[in-house]
Image (cartoon, rainbow, N blue to C red; front, side, top):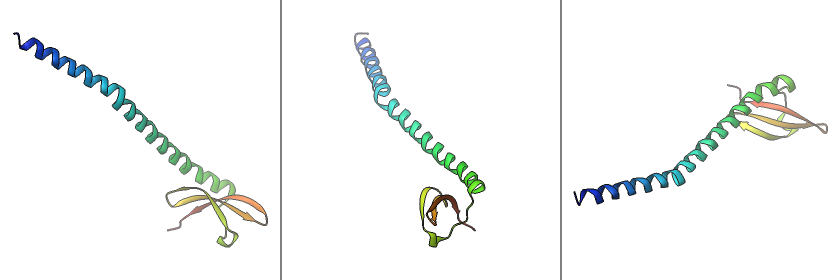
Length: 97
């Protein structure tokens, strides 16, 4: 019994320290990673939802000779700013299969 009580006390102390470490170091890091991952996914989904709306409202016709600047890309599609005769317009570039 003299050796069992110190062993149990040591085990409980180690368990408490491990939990304290988990709550102060590991869990905040995991929470931040989860938040950032969700945010990145949300940005991609928002861009993906915007492309068809831009295409129906503003069109997708442009010539590479006009020159363009990419606003944002989602996989193989992109929203591009095209300048024709000094007028800038927003167009959608979608790869055709």
